[in-house]
Length: 555
Image (cartoon, rainbow, N blue to C red; front, side, top):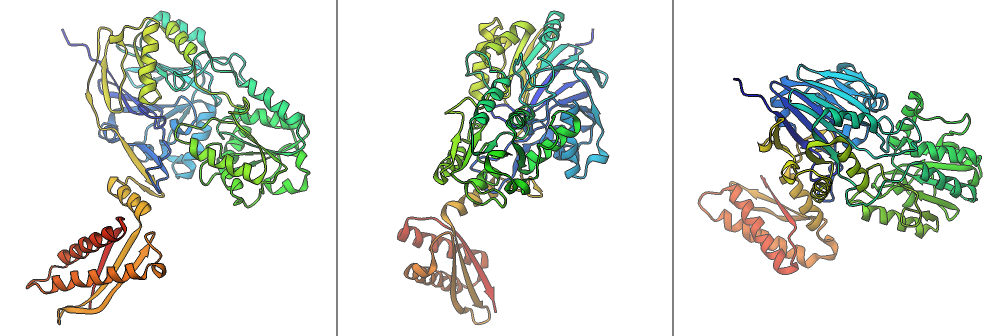
């Protein structure tokens, strides 16, 4: 009797981190992929624009891949698509708004005409090759058109929830389809993969509608110009800001490239309704009194080049913050962004503006399920195996414990890492190995050309500065043609450190003369002598370690 093949679940990104979500499902000679995200760079990645997944394993198995299935349109789920599709061109399946955002992204990368985009709707079942069928199920999240995926395979059904919460009063669209999830649970679910972001929070996530009520009360009693910073992708939040502005007879202007793009796409696709005459160009705000204007802007995470940050540092070309402004930051800092957000808030206070943020008032609700919702889902779906996803390591471990509380046996709950291979069928599940998974850094048009060595050099330069020593050698006479020249960048100001610079020149001269006195002159050895001698001198003199770059010219 032939041995039954096993389903392989391989998370390439999205575990032990927030971002880069990408999971491969492999059975026999077929693979389907769920999501293809990116992450923003950490503080220890100077100059890097974004981080995407290392898809080496998928490139090696490109002929097996039948398609990419998207849960929703957030950057950490779709941001890596252009880079993936340049390597592996396969069909992309997603709901209306999700594909609207993907189209815009592919257009920027000149890929739109070459990629097959397949629009789906909740309730639809799509074939992903011979072995996979994927059903799209309505969920609630902080962006419209979010779905969970029920992936049917020869060994059982896997439910991948994407990002989700239960919102019984959504702004647009339907309530999460718990009835369908319950039906699938009764049919039998092999494995559940569920969002772990808010596993530390007890209770339930609040409804998005509660934020709209808060906006209305803020707008109603305010005689100042109002500037609201929020996530561009939170279409429901932007809609509620527009509704509150229209109700209080205010015009709305939009600032920030991503905000402008998403508002335009959402209006075009019918996900945002703007009363006629309410939306104005940012250039027109000076035509109105402050209490007649609302500006919706990006920058809720304190991003250095975002619109709100530029406003806070008086660097925005069209908006000058004054003490007559009320700024509402309608978002919570993503882990790691707390310091950047705090800096922006402090700058706004220094200007004299009034600032409302989550610590002062409930002007933000999360799009992710809290503990009671997470437990309810597990009880409803009744999976044999449980796999927490979308979280840092502690989130995954805590989510596993939560699953055990509602009856999942500890041996059936798996904390995976990026690259882990979980092989399972109806009888068993175990981690059988790893595939290559990691991060690829994107810097401008360069993809993957910034590695650990380049990052190390950038950090070295940022922390310690650079010394360049230029020496001219007369090769025939085997002597120094001109005294070394010293250039300092980020180390010391040359004019205020003449004694130190003279010392560097003297030590460099001695190192060169020592090298020239040898029978065979080795330029590489000469450079190393200069480097080590100067490094030793600088450290003894200053206790600092700048990068030292010797340049030798011949005459």
